Structures are given as C-alpha cells and as structure tokens.
Image (cartoon, rainbow, N blue to C red; front, side, top):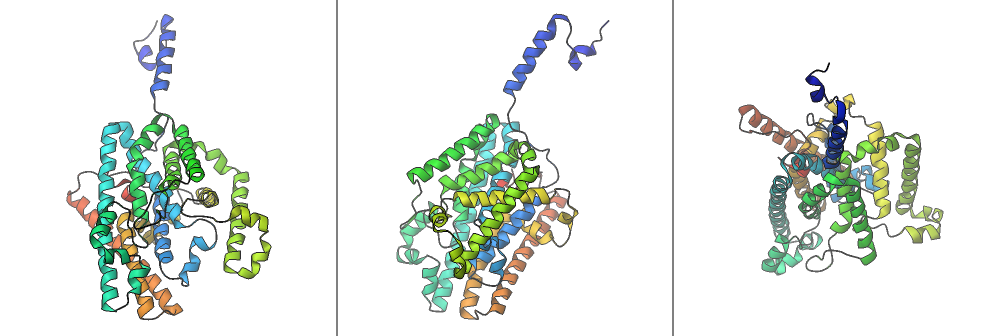
Length: 421
C-alpha cells in the first residue's frame, strides 16, 4: 500500500521511475553552474583586506617616507592595486550574481549600469576637486611644478579639449587611474556574469585567453594627450574575472588545493624568492646575486599589463591569507581592526578622499618640511582622517536605517564593487 506523500517526496512508483530520472536529468542541465553563499552577515575578511588596500594606496601615493617601507610593494612583485581589483571583482559578482540568478539578465544589467553611473559621477567629481586643489596650490604658491608633477599641464593649456577627454576617461591626472579601470571592468560585468551562470570555468578560460592575446598583439587603450592607460583593462580584467569566479563557487572548488600543505610551501617559497629579488632593487650591492639569465627572462615586471609574476605573487599572498585568516577569527570583531574594516566597507568614498589627501600631503611635505617626522605625521594624519570619514559615513547610514529612511539593505559586501544593489 502506498501513501499519497510518496510521489511528493520523490519516491518513484511502478513505471514512473524512468520519468523521474528524466526530470532529474533535465533539472541538472537547466540549473546554473554557479553557487552563491547564503546572504547574511558581511564577510569581514574582505572588508579588512579592502580597507588595508586603501591605506596602502594612500601611503604609496605620498612621496617616499618611513611608512612607505611598510607597504607590500617593497617586499614583492604585487601591491595594493591587485588586492583592490580582486576584491572588487569578488564583491561585484557576489552582489550582482545573486541579482542575475533571481531577477534575470535585464534587471541585473540595469543595476550594474546604475552602479557604473555612480562610480563615473564620483570620478568626475573627484577630477574636478583634484584639479581645483592643484590649480589653487600652484597659483597661490607660484609653483608651476605642482601642475607638471600632477599631470594637469595639458588641462591648463587646452581646458576645453581636456575636459571632453576627461569625460571620456582618456585624460587623468596622477593617481586617478584606478576608477576609470574599474568603470570599464564593471561595464562588462553583466556579460561576465551571464557567461559564468552556465560555464564559469569556460568564462575564466576566455579571460585568460584575452590576457594572453593582449600580451601577444600588444593591445591597449590610448590616453590623452599621448601614451596609454596606466592599467591596461585587457590585462587587468583577468584579476577582476578571477575574483568573480572565486565568488561564484570557484573558491569552494579550490578548497582542497588551498588547504594542501604542498600549496602552502610553494606559495611561501615564491614569496621568499620575490622578497629577495626586490631586495636587490633597494640594495644595489646585492645585484650580483641575480643571475643575468634570470634577469633577462624576468624583467621588466610591468604593472601596466599585469605581469604574470605580479599575478602569481598576488595568488600566493591570497592563498596564505585564506589559509591563516579564518572567517570565524575573533580578531575580526576587535576594536583594533575596526578602523580598517570601516574603511573597507565604504571604499568608494574613502578611495576618493585618499587621492585628495595624497596631494595635500605632497604639498605639506614640499612647502613645510620633508623630514622623517613630518613624513610620518602626514601619513598617520591622512589615515586618521580616512578612518574618521568612514566612521561618520557608517554612523550616518546606521542612523538612516534606524529612522526607516532606507527601505532596502544588502546582505553582501556591496560598496565600491556592489553598491546598493
């Protein structure tokens, strides 16, 4: 005797066994190939690393000082830019990948384009304030070198043409190259997510292919008035797509590889080797330790086209970070790491503020004092201001949520990469 619950529970009866098997096979074929984590508590490790990247970018944009020696670019091939772009790809895929699965391609694309517009407006606003800041300082202190060092001489000569080129993302002063790169990458995010919805590994393979073809055919985007983009989107898309691939299930599939002791020792050995190579850059007396054949093969390690050695260095850092920085580590909720996490949670605003503060610090060091104490004071003051701004933004958003003025919250790491999807 059978129960009416049997077919509902999936228990096949009589000749219907073949029908159920066919239905199961069809469901497997039609199901998306990607997997998404359950929305809920923020991934504080991402916020922590993104906040750290913002601080490092700010310090690296200042003239060389004591704190500069604490940034990762002095101890390996990659720097904070790789961290920033990878996490941006990861968080963008996390937020808009869910929208792609739940609402479809059109809705997800509309949300991505809305975020692209927000970032574009932020870039134009930052460009305007940055130009005003540099122009005022150069005029007030009668020092045209500021305009030359910050790359705005062409704007002062032909402001009408330069403004149009800036709106087209072809003209950018010094330190304003990351947001245009991110805008371009985000424009292609809907296509990336649509492909990853069904064939994530193939999508990553196509990204690798584009990277290889760019190196082979020397593809690039031109800049105004001459030259090319400092960050070649055709190459840096690999890091962005890899971040998206990890967010959509790739990291889970790599768990055994990442947990392997062999992987840990390979990553450690590579990081140590990279450290000794960079040591020869800072101490020329040690250059004799580098075999000439390896130098010819290795150099130049270009940042513009995301050299393979830089990408591998970032992968090694990421693998060790995931291994030793656990998601449930209690330190992520400590007050000592709260400033970094807050900055990472509001990365668009803090990045723009960091660019503004970097030139202000450059001005103070040039006009007031260039001593070691002033270098350290400027660096620490800039970081404290970034933390203060992040705290104010967080307080304001929290107050708005309590008052009910915000009707929808996101459960992921939405800020610069995701926005308020």
